[in-house]
Length: 292
Ligand SMILES: C[S@@+](CC[C@H](N)C(=O)[O-])C[C@H]1O[C@@H](n2cnc3c(N)ncnc32)[C@H](O)[C@@H]1O
Image (cartoon, rainbow, N blue to C red; front, side, top):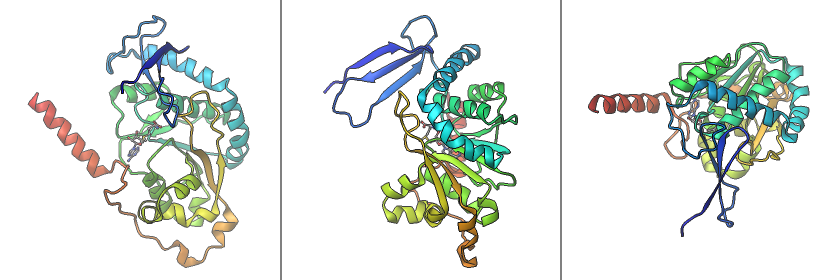
């Protein structure tokens, strides 16, 4: 059966495409970058997007988000925790291709707006193996730092760090927990990403043991503040929570609790782009370029 789409031009110059197929379980939308203010429905190919144009649209996205009840309510919930924690580093992983994808672009707007609310005046650090040259340029233009190495989420926290992992593979959170598997380090970890409680609720135990062992282990010490998913587009901030760890609960764990082995994943349920997969992709792309 064919599916009809309705197009409308959003305030920020992005074409908003909605499916009219009523029986879809989730509200599905696709938005693409178009030349702003022209009203044309012609999609701009990746690579021909003008950075200045993108930045102008991005200003509007931020304004739109900041004026939403969603943002105000979320900030009211998370600011007391994050301001109290005195965050010294923000690392954003798995944002995705924000030039093409409006979900990623709104998520980028969120961390920017949150940065302002926190009066965080250092540079946000970003990594996603799918970033292209233009994404890197734009993030640098926005005063961010793009990390070059694929650490697969294995960052050691030397200072209080907010990790922003919007809709990221659970293995990244799991790796992060493994790398900081001590009460002293976990106390410094704050993580906005897919709800741990949701991951545990929705995945078979067998897969959780393999792919999210550390998420399972730390469940009872983890404090979770759920983001109410009431933004106008419901595919952007769904299943998202702020997570942090209760110091007294962590300290009460017996010594053997902290004995840990580095996780290794099988291909089953593997969403993470590992260093090896990334290397393979780079070699294939280079070979394709050489052949063309
Ligand atoms: C499900 S997508 C989410 C994209 C976007 N945030 C969204 O909500 O649509 C998962 C993202 O994680 C990224 N990712 C996979 N492996 C990664 C790694 N090792 N380090 C950082 N990001 C990674 C992918 O490239 C992808 O952009």
